Each structure stands twice: as C-alpha cells, then as structure tokens.
Image 1: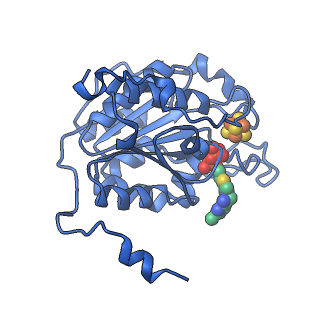
Image 2: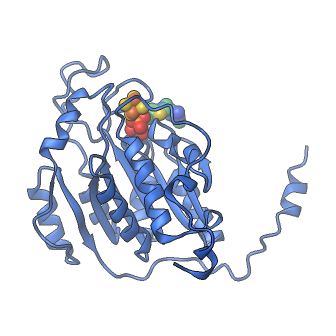
Length: 279
Ligand SMILES: Cc1ncc(C[n+]2csc(CCOP(=O)(O)OP(=O)(O)O)c2C)c(N)n1
Ligand code: SF4
C-alpha cells in the first residue's frame, strides 16, 4: 500500500457512484463493474487519477456507475475520445468500456487504429453478441445462424469477427478474453491490463439474458486457455484460430513502446478556448 492511500484504504465499493445500475437482472455487465472496482482498489489508484470513457449501449452505461472521472459519450467514439484524453493527460489511467456493437460496428475503425497506435490504455468490450440497448439486433460478433432478431430472419449469414484475432492483426500489445461468470479472474486480468504499458484489449464474454437467454449456458462452455501467455504473434494467431472463442486467459502480451505524443508544450489553460466558444 502506498503512503498516500495507507490512511484512506480505498475499497472496491468506493469506486462505485451513487447511481444504481438499471441493467436487467442477470446481465453480465454487473460483474464487469465489480471487476473494475476490484482492480482499481487492488492497484490503490486514487479516483481522481482514473478516467473511464464509454460509448453508447447498455454496457456503456458503466461510466456513470463509477466514481472515477467518466464520460458516457457518443456511440462508437469512446476510443477516439480516450486517445485525445491520454494525449493531453498521460498521467491519467485511462479505461475504455462498451459493447461489441459500439466497439466493433460503428466504432470498428477506431478500434483497429487504437490497436496499432498502442497508446497506454485499457479497452474492455462487454461482448454479448447482440445490440442489447436497441432491443436485440445482430452485432459483428453474432453467429450467422442466430435467427431470433426480426431484422435478420433466418440469421445474418455473415461470419462474425473474432475480436481477439482482429486486435492481434491490428497491433494490440495485450490481448485477453475473460468471462463475467468469473469476476475475480476478470479483475486479475484488468490489473494485468492496466499495468501493461501499451494498448490492452479485453474481450469480456458478458451474457445478455434478455435477448440471448441461451448465453446463460456459457458458464458450462467457458474454460481456461491450456497454454501460457505468448509473445509470439504467429502462435497467438494459431491459438485464436483453433479455439471456439470460449477459452479465457491472457492470450498475448508483447513489449513494444507505447505511443505518447509529446505534450510538454501543450497549454492546458482552457480559458481562451472557453472565451472563443462563448455565446
Ligand atoms: C450514431 C448512433 N447510431 C445508432 C445508435 C443506436 N444505438 C444505441 S446503442 C446501439 C447498440 C448497442 O449495442 P452494443 O454496443 O453491443 O451494447 P449493448 O447494448 O449490447 O451493451 C445502437 C445501434 C446511436 N445511439 N447512435
Ligand atoms: S438488454 Fe441485455 S445487455 Fe442490456 S441490460 Fe438487459 S441483459 Fe444487459
């Protein structure tokens, strides 16, 4: 425990806000909130040193449920906003969170460029293979034959993204898959991701019992990766390709200097900026 926090002893609950989550009972996103607060408490990070940026979707509501700095932003734009924040405030621990629709559909372009840019931040996708907030449309991780959505009768017929494979080819330097049925495992993963110097990506399998009730079976399908974390991208790619998407653990981690634009001369005084925008 560091000196500053020795007297304070921040507990996981201290990282929660007074706002009660309105997620459906059984939604996996509750466990992500718990995992984030546990990880921050473990790392003893002062709340004012952390920012949680999210997009739009059920999962993206998470920013409002924590007591760290937060921005519940624009659909698919969380990573762009987070990159700007990190460029200006490299001292902040920047976390980004949202859904598979937010991060891989509308935000897909930002995702691949965030991976290759390798700024020091942690991005967690709550993957429920559906658009929960807008009532159950197929997302980029939905199986092609999932036919329960009125918009895609008979299924989309389109192969889903493999988020881990996409992150690997785009250049992420830390790639993990977790499961909300194991919040402690997810919290440990988040600690490792936050400590990693570079862009860390976590795909958290997070069931949506409302629109994908069959996902409640995930707890019987999820297992730990048999192999240790690798820093070899070829090996990581082989493992991702040969896996059914239900193995969890830190898949890949490599040490490439994080990108941080020089900001020594940036003027953080926003007074003039505010004057220019005065109405
Ligand atoms: C620019 C824009 N397009 C579309 C929407 C409508 N919209 C809100 S949330 C959402 C998808 C949410 O799905 P996901 O990101 O997977 O999160 P979940 O709700 O499943 O957690 C969409 C399409 C929007 N808010 N803004
Ligand atoms: S609709 Fe699905 S993702 Fe949204 S809160 Fe309910 S269970 Fe969670």
